[in-house]
Amino acid sequence: VTYTRTSNQRPRFTVVVSAKTSKLATVRNRAKRQIRAVLRQFVREHPSYSIDVVVVINQISPRTNLALAIDQVLQKIKT
Image 1 (cartoon, rainbow, N blue to C red):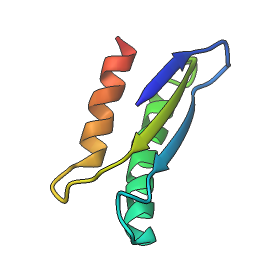
Image 2 (cartoon, rainbow, N blue to C red):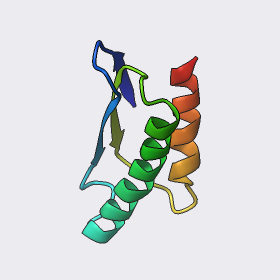
Image 3 (cartoon, one colour):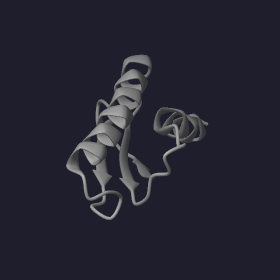
Image 4 (cartoon, rainbow, N blue to C red):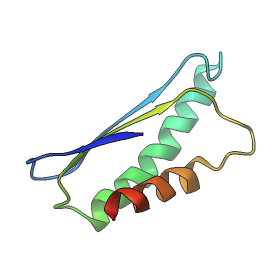
């Protein structure tokens, strides 16, 4: 996760899931949906937070809770 504070009116996000993560597009798309759901909640809670965030996923463990992991990163960004 990389982020930059900007002068934009609202936060912007992008999510990239590498093809190395899984050969199955359904697995990669599910990961993107889970991450975007957390990011949408962040935007609802902080609509005027000026930040650009790029989330790059290179590897996913079956036990990884993506929503929890991204939420923890966003908590660090807010401080």
